[in-house]
Image (tube, rainbow, N blue to C red; front, top):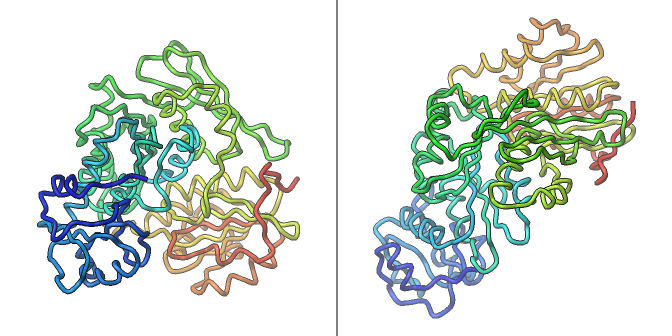
Length: 473
């Protein structure tokens, strides 16, 4: 673990110690309940004043506090700064710039976590630090960066998420990525980010506002936005990922990929084929994944190649990748199959998940348990109706729409030929339980995190085995 020197921290923050720590400082925490012995407690003024928890922090093992007002009644070394929030960012940025290894920043409207998880495996988990959980915002990113230990880490993968204008500029300065992956630009967090053009502009700030000349990797769909199109034309350090097999010579800033799935095999194994400029094509086996997740894997493979990982190492490591909790997990029980993909939802991820669900379970009746998509702004109803129009149902399919926002999906479903008797609108999640438990077939759970759809998964359902066996049809 990294060790932080009092004099260095004072220099980085232009702060003043009110008594110096006697013990080694080994990390940082913004939560007095979760800090570890040796941590510095960062007192931030947010919904609550962090300075009110300095005593609790000391009791729980903090060796010092980062503060913008000193509490003389607490026997705890305190580094006094003008703004503890800004000082926290300054420390994270300075610590990152001391790191000599490779830092990869990942952003996008969806798929950030799966891409991060895959890339961490490809880079070598024993030597790679990566974002844990959902620590991807203005507080989570500095906590991630401050865990970098130059003695044990040669690479770092940082997930960068935003929901307000201007946030990415702050994250970019801290992360200063050597490599940037942008997974997708799609409607998400529109309450704060307004529209797709603003989303694209803000996401692009991860490389445009960085103080490093990053190698930037993004899919072809991003070219419709000015910042990405201009960067692709003007920068040499960019790799554009196109779907499909190249028809001729591959240009210097382009790569291509395709994913082939062998059906009628246990687990439906897939093969990723990747073509890069100046390199022979490669084929790598991987689990059966959705189209969107497959594209994200291809982006991760490109980033690993740029970071110096060999094709042999990638081929050996990639098959170990599995989606993390609530992000595309398959369960089985009592002859039925369940696909749980409810960590979050926006229009792009909903379509991707639904299409994958249909392809994975082609020969069984299907129950779609769909909840609303949050943070879509003033046009949220339009997005829900459009989603319904994109769903191609079958005569035995059943749709449970949970909540007011999901109920709007019914308009699009009806326009697309789904019968009224196939649609069940419910306002209470508990009312869906008997329908889910009685349904004989395959069940999809998809919706925004606030709905906690995983609570509808029957108690008898168990996760698919590691080989990915699924029900036969």
